[in-house]
Structure formats: structure tokens, C-alpha cells
Length: 131
Image 1 (cartoon, rainbow, N blue to C red):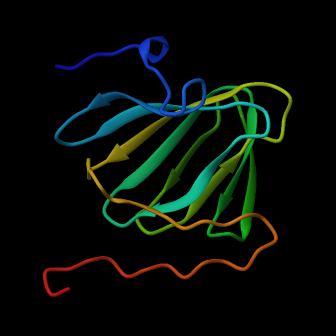
Image 2 (cartoon, rainbow, N blue to C red; image 1 turned 90 degrees about the vertical axis):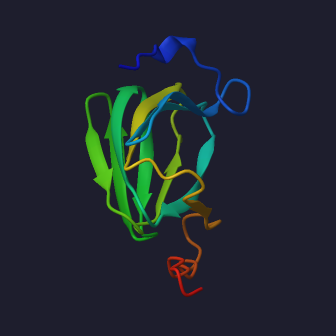
């Protein structure tokens, strides 16, 4: 068994960004923290689902650069493989959410820089044994 605490991890960028709480053979669990005005780069994962559980604050989730969702405490969302997702905290409060990637797939994050109002970036095809 593995265990961890959400309040014991250090975000990647100091006081904001993702932080892994548990990394395992079958899933990764972490905490994303966004300060007011922060965003998490638009990205995809070709080989894993990513689920989200909002634990604090409010933010906007953009899916596939077209669908906009307002997130608040208690909301749960899931993006299947190859579905782009982008988070931005337009509120004046801290935003936190648990993320779960399953199956664990290290190196599967593909950043596709994008901002609302821009054309959607082209999604690269997943790598296969032939390429």
C-alpha cells in the first residue's frame, strides 16, 4: 500500500503547479495548485485517463479548446486519452484539485500551448511501435 498527504507535497513551481502525492505502477495521484491568474498549459495524454476532483476554489477547464466548464469545490471531471485540457484560475482565490492519471504513463504529457480565443493546436498522433 502507498499513502500520502495533500498538504505534504511541494508544487513544481514553488507555490503553484502540479505536485505528485503518489506515483505507482498503475496510477499517479497528485495535487494541482493555481494561484489567481495562473494557468496549467493545454496538454494531452495519449495513454491515460486523467480525472479531477476540485478541493478548493474555482477555475475554468477548457476541453479540446472548445468546451468551457466552470469548476468549483466538489466537482469531478474525467478526460479520456487524447482529449486536450487546459485550466486557468480567473478567480481571486487559490484553486486546488486532485488529479488521477490511470494507467500510470510517465512521459505521456504532451504540451500543446493554447490560450482561449486562439485556434486549436494540431494534436499529434500517438507514438506506435512503427514510428
